[in-house]
Image (cartoon, rainbow, N blue to C red):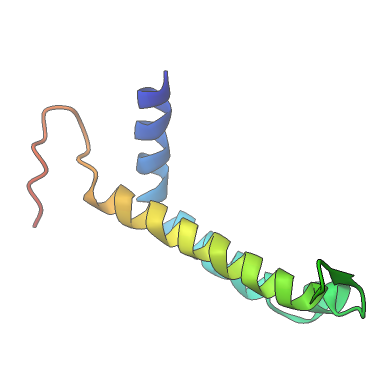
Length: 85
């Protein structure tokens, strides 16, 4: 079950549309409406909310980039030995 899910995820991440969607989502999340929501004087564990928002977004974007790179290097099917162009 996990293997089938992983193969499907990697196939979807290879699509150009996925790259564009995540890029646009990242641009939207780092612009006015969302940044203003977290730009409050409240602090969580002594850290301003805006800093946590940016650091959390940064960590999530690194995770998404990691998944994209794993999808690129993942063979398309079980018979492919990983030969790349």
